[in-house]
Amino acid sequence: MRTIGYLRVSTAEQRPDRQIDGLKMICDELHIEKLSAVSPHRPVYERVIASLRRGDMLVVWDLDRAFRSVIDALSEAEKLRARGVHFRIANLSIDTSTPAGIFVYTMMSALAEFERRMLSQRTKEGLAAARQRGKRLGRPPKLTPEQLSDARTRVCAGETTRSVAEDFHVAPWTLSRALRRH
Image (cartoon, rainbow, N blue to C red; front, side, top):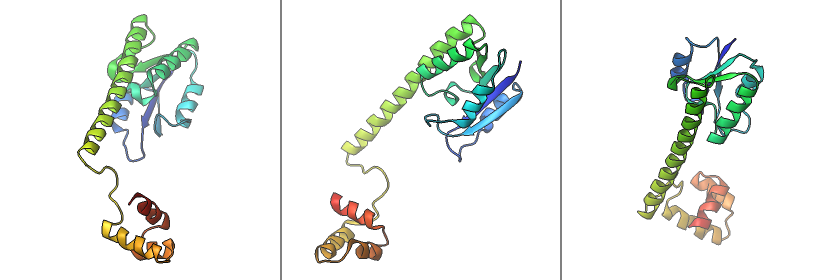
């Protein structure tokens, strides 16, 4: 029986140190992926899953490091169980090799999904509240209102968008989009 650790961080800038520290003493192998969980293809994850054999244990540090949703988590766990592969979430001490472990895993999957959805909802509500208060969200504009007014006058007078954009050190599409919004 092998104990295989799967670690994932969403971006190349994130560090998997916390996961490595938690898994290195309990796993025979560690496989690290630097990719968002919602990516359509996760090559490291797919390779690890394909390599698992009956009696092996797949270990992740946190539930959200491996699965995209509660449906995905339950479906993947069931596929693994059908192959005789066990699954463990190390930081929660959940092991699907027992009926109690499967029950707790199911409940934790649902709670994790609930928390992700609540976080998304709170974020959207916070952004909407900021917009209602007149807060501009996103990147700051490349051109000031005065520059846009000047650019509009010049383009209307016959200058090309490209030449005006070059004068303001922006891409032509940036100027075109800003003029449409202004």
